[in-house]
Image 1 (cartoon, rainbow, N blue to C red):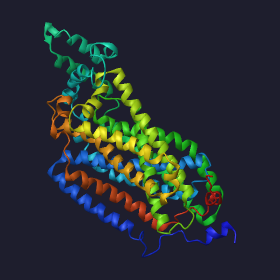
Image 2: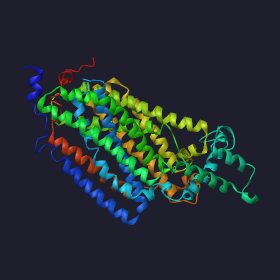
Image 3: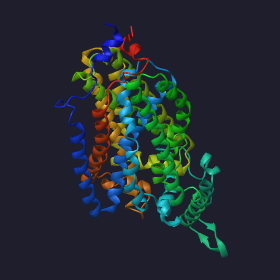
Image 4: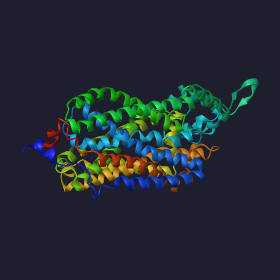
Length: 481
């Protein structure tokens, strides 16, 4: 019997009564339970709910977007090795439209999350602390005072330079304090950003992102599953023709979406590399989930010999490579902001690296998102032998620390938002700046449960392996040597 007839005769489907048969029901139950808890939390504390929900949304949106990247890159490169594991990524990608529905609580809580939705003076306390951040950056987040060096070239630096002498002349000879100068500069900066940071344009852009993600995810998925029955090569050609445009649309939509939903939590802060940093985190999260699910499918016998050691070897190499890429991009963002020492930029790291509870979390992310996985995954033996147990452990570690990283990204802004009269550095040092809440778990269960219920339901309805793909035979005979 030929290899082609062998894989056609194998039933790559989830069986009734098997360990995966009720996975979507369990996920749905957890999702409903989590959403009910989140709803109860919303009634108690609107603001905490908004931030907890945004954190949970980031965790699973990045998984879905990273999976979309994995899928179109395989078509872009005409990859043969990944055919048998690609379908699992397609399942994770195919549930992207559900995030449009899950976005509704974020849209409803926009005033709780984003200072720029209020009057421009609402963010005064945060901006005023930029002067403090600039002065303190000499030893921690930068190397020059706000009124000197590179920071002096910007508007904020100019204001701080005036304030260096203790006062500046205002209208009618009024002597302006440092806070008044910073307040005026903040209003001017936010006024210039108002053409972009306004509710109407915010929602228009959000609709655009979801339309792009809906089109790409459903087009790639439909072409792939339709090919299972027809074996028509035209479906492969369609996906290959779509892949280059998908790369451009994906890059733009992901970058501006994370600008809008996460960087805009602190509207004074800006980082041109932030989109790339979130992209790298998305791919690491997606590869971690892809590794864990395909290992489970292999271990329960649902994929036969279609997914084997060779595929996990390659998945392990990708996971290792993107972990290093994440570390490179994250360090680049930190180093460039530290070196430039611009007060508006250093605010982000003062919230997370000043002496206080978040500093320990920052150090843990460095250690567990890079140092430990680097040594854990670098060995060829880890990826090929020990029944992939160490690879599995590495994937679990990376996904867990991804959750911590998204929490680290969002929740310091909650502490600042609940202490509007205090400078960022002062808030960052407070013990209550890092306070866990049961709403964090409820929102994580709610968003994750709904998303995974859709993913697992689709897994139960389709082949786990793309049996109609013309490159399947190459994947079945993959040999890394």
